[in-house]
Amino acid sequence: MNWPAISFDWNHVRAFLATAEEGSFSGAARALNSTQPTIGRQISALEEILGVTLFERSVRGLDITESGSDLLDHVKAMAEAATLISMVADGKSQSVTGDVFVTATDLASAAILPELLAPLRKTAPGVRVHLVCSSDLRNLAKREADIAIRHVRPDQPDLIARHIGDFRANLYAATSYLDRAGRPRTPLDLADHAFVGGTNPEHLVATYADMGIPVRPESFVMSTDSGVVAWELVKFGYGIAMQPEVLGEAAPGVEKVFPDFPSVQFPIWLVTHRELKTNRRIRLVFDLLARGLAEKVSAVSSGSSIQG
Image (cartoon, rainbow, N blue to C red; front, side, top):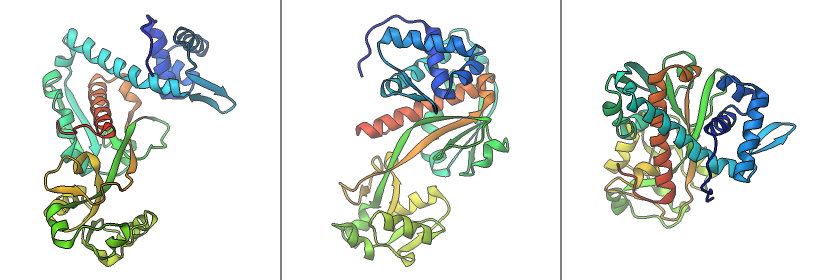
């Protein structure tokens, strides 16, 4: 959607962003230390200025509209950029120090986060990031981490969760494996191929069966509980595996098994504590990750290059 060049009140934008993130006027009012009627008036004023409806009011509460969703992506980027610009301008980013614990899968920690966190060394060299490689949803609730990258939305009420977007996954194998084992033409041809999987092959058999791919437990010639190890096994030529396109499309010597096979989408959630609102170093890392992950999602969705 092309938004007109309109001058509007930044407070209205903040009210919109808080309402979208909190899911209600009352939640936005608490987040902004305002009142529910004020938030409602600010949203209405923004809708009138833009000439669109941002939220549908119903008995269930508020539902963001398509126009609202379109605007939300731009507003998030504006808010993150404004925070960073403000901190850099007055030197606060350089003065922010301390530890921030980030938890993600071992594959994301090894293949994606080094690139996304690199700018932090320049903007806030005093911030020390600790990567906790785990898929355990309890990390934040147990205060083992400050920020989590997860594929499911947590249900703990004291956490802030932002849906960054959706990554895609597909079947990949090393060119060396496909040269040796043959290139399947249909999913049914995969019955005789080797696969790389996790430590629960029965679960993977059911998952692949739902996709029309006939595999058996014995099809998994190599299994591991590590995403990094699984990816290395695929690249080495042990067999086929479902892998993120953000990695598969950039890896030399690896190719998609079926060029036209439908991708599997999996959501990316960035999760943190309510402390985000008061802790500058957590806010800095959170915004950096949000922006970097959103760019990765956008790059893969548009089919453009995903390498740094």
